[in-house]
Structure formats: C-alpha cells, structure tokens
Length: 167
Image (cartoon, rainbow, N blue to C red; front, side, top):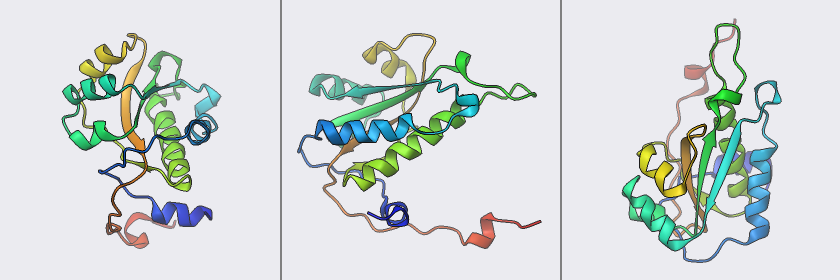
C-alpha cells in the first residue's frame, strides 16, 4: 500500500475477527515502532504484547470495553521517564517519543491489513498489576491489534488552513 493511502485508510477499529495475527506481521509492526525517532535517540520505550486470553480478559478491569479484549492481541506501550531526554526547561520527551512510536506502529498495522484503536482512557494501576509492570515504567497507551470486523467511515478533519499558519 502506498504511504499516503495507508494514512488515509487508517481507522480506529472497535470490532475484531477471531483470526490470530501472524508472528511475521506482529514483528513488522513492532519493528516499525522500534525504528521511530526518539529525542536524543534515548528510546525509553517498552511494548508488552498480550496474546493470552485470560490476561486480555483481565484487562477489562482497566478498560471495560469488550471489543478491546476480543482482539487477538493487545499492545501496551510504556515509557521509562527516567531515561527520556529533557530539553533545557526540563520538559520530558517521554510522551512524545512514545506517541511517535505508537503512530509508526499503528500505520504499519494498517499497511499489514490489521486494525488498531489507540486507547488512552484506561486505569493504569490495574494494567500495571495485571502485566507486572515495574515502577520505573509508565503505561501510557494501549491498542488492540487484529483483523478488522468492520469498515468504519472516515471521520471529518479540520481544513488544513485551520491547523497551519505560515509566517
């Protein structure tokens, strides 16, 4: 798929087929996240890959949408705030680094014919407990990953002139 077609066709998927995700596709998607740029190349990230059905079901405690755990894979993206680059005003780039990697991952999944849905509205403490995430890691985003069982329409976007200013 051509790059701009991938961007245009990406959708948030909330229904998944029960078809397993091939290991080769999963690894290509994770490789896309690994190759994402990070501030000062610190790469303060860790991705948990959850395939186990019981563990996925347990994550309903953190995000109570059944479609989320029906996907054959859930990815939990964490960062290590202590390892992230900070600019001169001490702003941490951990969230930025993670967002770039997640975007790479989601676009790669789209190119592979897989669906995702960026989840940020989850309770972090149950995620931390269920996955055994150590204190130095912060769970920031999750996404189900699998073959879509729906084709949602594109949502409207602001016009370019509403989000760009030339100086």
